[in-house]
Structures are given as C-alpha cells and as structure tokens.
Image 1 (tube, rainbow, N blue to C red):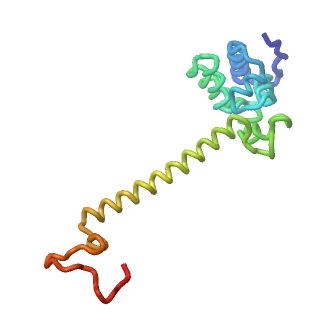
Image 2: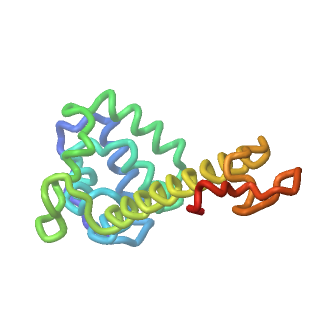
Image 3: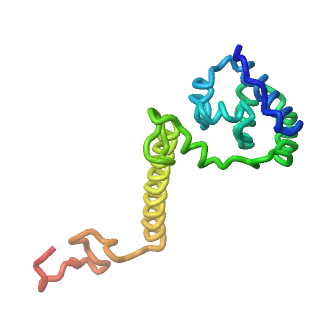
Length: 176
C-alpha cells in the first residue's frame, strides 16, 4: 500500500474528498503509478500530481480510475463536480498530461505513444478499408443499375447476328 504525503493545507474540503477517494480507488486496483499509467491515457507523473492534490484530475481520469477499481462512478463524478468548483487552479488540460509523459516514453511533444499509437493505426486502417469497401459497393451498384436499365452500349457480343440474321460486324471496319 502506498504511503501518501499529507494533502496541502490550502486544498479546499471538496477537493480533499475527491483526492482521498481517488487514493482509495488507486489502492483498490493494486497498481503502482507506473502500472496505472500503462492502463490509462495519463502518465505516471500526472497520476502523482492528481493523487498528491497538486493538480485537479480531468474528469476522464477520475472515470477511468473508478472503472479500473470497480468503484461507484456516480459518487466519484459527484465528488469531481464539487471539487471542480472549489479547486484553486481549475481543471488541468488533457494536452498538459500528454506533454508531461516521462522522456523515456515520449516522442515529440503531444505525439501518441504505445497503445494509443496502435489504436490510431487500427482506426486509420479501418477508415481506409471502409473507403475501399464503399468504392467497390458503389461501382457494383452502378454496374448492376446499368445492366438492369438495358444499357445497349456493348450489350451484344462481337460478331453477333442482328434480328435479320446478318452479322453486326461492319465489313468496312475490319477492326474488332
């Protein structure tokens, strides 16, 4: 179990309740801060700031921690709402969390890393596949529609006989 430093004396009561609840939830997960960082979109240092009361956690961070710990999400979100109104610095921006990643796991500022990069790649491949599928379906529908409409352009095979029994092939045009 993690031994936490005392929360700052200047932290409002509502914010203190939220941080204490998040600490309990973090303890319930059995994860270290590094493990928590691996399982969420927030860095180890961001979790350290949230759980020490130095920074207001984003709503999504509170939600994901609640889900990991199997906590009462309605209660945690109610605490978060109260803390947001009372927190001296306000809510931290998600981009600040991305920039706060430790140097060993971070690429260029704000660049996706690890699991997030894989999710982005999978989403890109899925988008390309969906586009190709849509194009193939559209081409197939156009082809089927032209066949149904009795499109006569190119409908007779080369050298077919007309209704009069004569070849449709012109004797003047020797090219097929």
